[in-house]
Length: 139
Image (cartoon, rainbow, N blue to C red; front, side, top):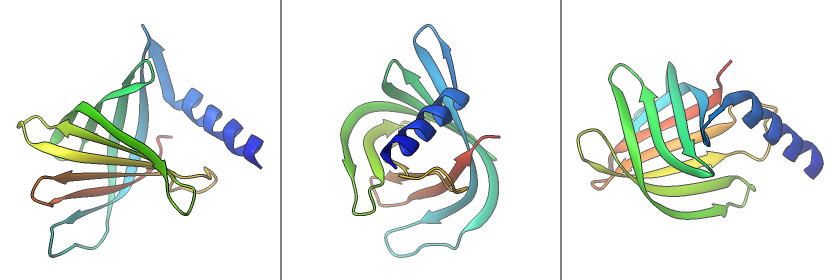
């Protein structure tokens, strides 16, 4: 079981990654998205948003969300990695968008890649407002 998962993960990233000078970009499609605030959450909207995770070596350094308004988030600090009770792998970062606004960025990669929804990206500003994107492989 573990072997199958790791093999799937390697295949996913090898198919999605484009390497050049120790940099790579992993592309996903957000197929559902929602906005939230400290007091409210909107429902899920069907969407088709290209989301690109840009790495330098093994370090995430930029996230680009190509929605109606494209936004780039520069990663300024790695916070932590952890696994939740469902064995989902989470990475938490601090980032700054194009407008200089600070965000907490939470990126989950699920322990199985056999479903359409393989990852989740959560972007939260310092006031508790943000976006959640359900991601699938960019095919």
